[in-house]
Length: 167
View 1: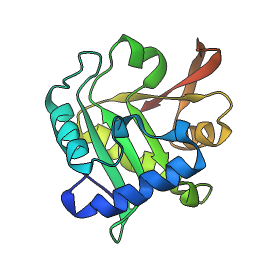
View 2 (view 1 turned 45 degrees about the horizontal axis):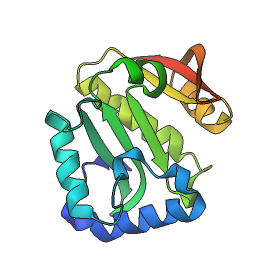
View 3 (view 1 turned 180 degrees about the vertical axis):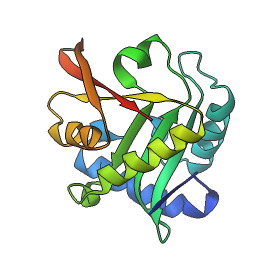
View 4 (view 1 turned 90 degrees about the vertical axis):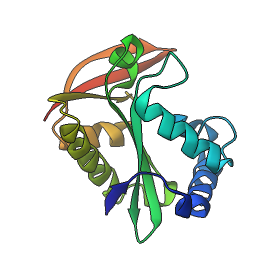
C-alpha cells in the first residue's frame, strides 16, 4: 500500500471510486472532488494548482494523494500544508476517506499513518486531525495513530472533535 499523487492513468479507477462513494452517501464525496466529479482532467488541474496557491482564497496549499495497491484506489487523503482559521477549528491538516468496500478492514489506520509520513516530510512537527463526534471509527483511527483529543467544538449543530498528533 502506498500514497501517490493523482495521474492520468488512474482516471477510470478514480471515477469508479467516486461512483462507489456516491452510491453509499453523497455527503461523503471528498471536498477534493468538488464540481463535476466526472471531469478528471479538471480535477488534476485543480489539485496541481492547490499545491502551490489555491485559486479560492478560502483554501490553503494542499496535496492530494490516492492510497493505492496495484493501481486500485482504496482511499484519498488531502494534506493541508498549513491551517487557516476555519481549518484550525474544524478541518485540520489531514482529511481522508476510504471507498465503502474497504472500510472496517484496517485501511483507515494505514492511510492516516502514510499521511503522517507525508506531513513529516513537509516539516510539520504536529498535525491537527478532526472528525465528527458520531464517527467513532474515525476517532479510533486517529487515536491509534497517536491522536490526543484537545476539545470538541460545535459545527452546524454537530460536534467536531479536534485531535493533535505529535510527529
